[in-house]
Image (cartoon, rainbow, N blue to C red; front, side, top):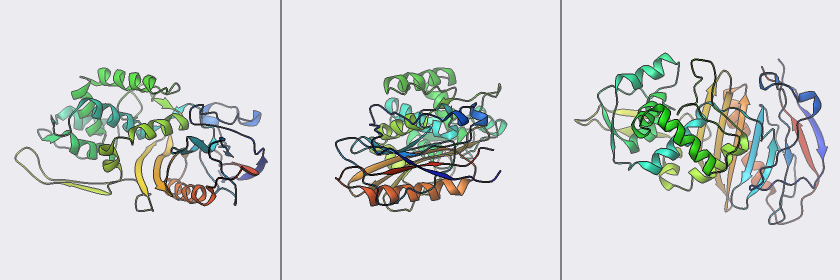
Length: 325
């Protein structure tokens, strides 16, 4: 299906603070089921504390949902279908890392078992190529979880700190409730569909809020901003080298955060960058092209930085993105 882009002028008074996470209502022609949803609506949003004067149009944004937050001021700068529940694939692993760091010391050791490896293999998940019998530090397993998006690492961590997958998933959902992520429900620690074809769901705005909280931990920020991590061979484990799947790293100020993909979720991205004294956090869900999510995120960061002023907000635009596959 061809990409379709329609641009509208919207009211300059649309407001959405981080505490409210208010999205734009879906127009009647787009109110179908998730699988048939075909539009991402984007609008500028502002609060009184710090406002965005639109000096130029925002870049085109594709996918089923998008959200851009200035975490420093608490403003939603751009929002589209941001409150709509949908699969988020491996963005789930941000919550996995968050829960693990609340309970474990990075120096703790986890033994990899055959079940961890087979889980990734049998469910067509991305893997860190962990080897059964290896004993790895939690700190290193977080790199295995977040850089190559290892479902084997997610399984090992959840199995250990649940204890058990069901116990760990319950902790993830409890943490979501504590953080006010009302539209988020996890079914596992990795975001892969369950045998029944179901997967956990969240929203772009919930994932942005989670990212803001998770990145307050400098240990996680260090992991997500790393492009490559090497672990030397020891008597406990073989050598490993993991490369980050986040193609946005290397852009100015970018500190992560996480990529994701399943057929149901499409290509997803949570991204964060520090620009001009502001921490910007964005989420793109349901993209059809892997590389374009990074191009879009880079363009959104540049657009937000270019338009950050203390003036009143002027006329904005709303962009409808591509039709879903």
